[in-house]
Image (cartoon, rainbow, N blue to C red; front, side):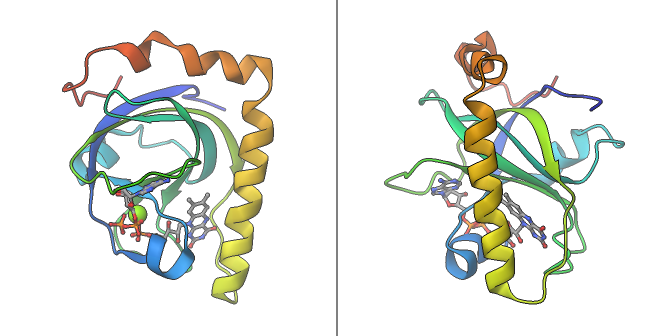
Length: 154
Ligand SMILES: Cc1cc2nc3c(=O)[nH]c(=O)nc-3n(C[C@H](O)[C@H](O)[C@H](O)COP(=O)(O)O)c2cc1C
Ligand SMILES: Nc1ncnc2c1ncn2[C@@H]1O[C@H](COP(=O)(O)OP(=O)(O)O)[C@@H](O)[C@H]1O
Ligand SMILES: [Mg+2]
């Protein structure tokens, strides 16, 4: 797919607060400025890749780009669920990600449970894909070791 792998860094901002509360799956949302900096022709949908908060460890992640049709958002969002348990929230911190592969398009669902189980399947698919040697190597990319504080995309 075009644009992949895509490296991106930006501040974590507040969303609608649904991820943790309604879905039990928190997503770190990028600011509008970062969302607008994405290539306009990048497909909306669900992706997998690697992510790190500040200078922390690099973890597996799943990412959603789009309008969340289940919730009919008006603004496009780019949200990362990091496959790791954090002790605290990290609003205001710099999140660095590399988007590696596409999983599926965004969908509407007939129930919250159906949305949650689709996301859980995405997480399992991401875990499997990211164990492949060609995907694992991006975990060690120098991008993750550059000094933070430059919320610049490239
Ligand atoms: C892996 C993954 C897959 C998702 N798939 C869909 C989807 O197919 N349809 C949809 O409406 N929202 C989807 N979402 C987005 C959730 O609806 C969204 O993360 C949730 O509403 C939390 O939003 P918030 O950060 O504003 O609280 C997905 C999110 C993730 C992390
Ligand atoms: N594993 C995780 N992945 C993503 N965000 C996490 C994780 N653990 C804790 N968080 C925190 O939860 C927040 C996201 O929760 P969420 O309910 O989606 O709220 P919001 O709607 O404000 O994005 C993130 O901004 C981050 O501070
Ligand atoms: Mg969120």
